[in-house]
Image: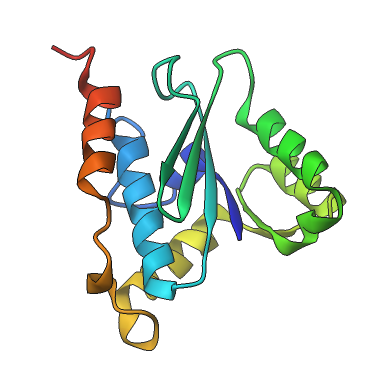
Length: 158
């Protein structure tokens, strides 16, 4: 199980840019691909200042995206989630290169991996699906998920 600082990870992936208006959607698709390639991972990804106010949480198969209110930092949202997990926090790996997030994870006895190292792990897992579950068994996003993303991210852009 992974808990991901979304924008921090985007900054570590060469082909996704923080300047791209669809960066969150692209990361979620990549995380879902990572989960499907390994057939055992579950990911919670946290974004700040990302989606419209109406979208606070969105499920995309094994990936759950949380869109944090503008007045709350992702750091605080992840810290709060770790506190709520209590003893089971040790079953999670927190993905961030932010020192505050890493320290909070260690205090909660969660594992820590830097965004750069996780980006490499994702790339390796996705590029070597033969040793994992086949990617073609499940589409990256269902039609309903694609339509929901279009509605959320493109409704105010015209």
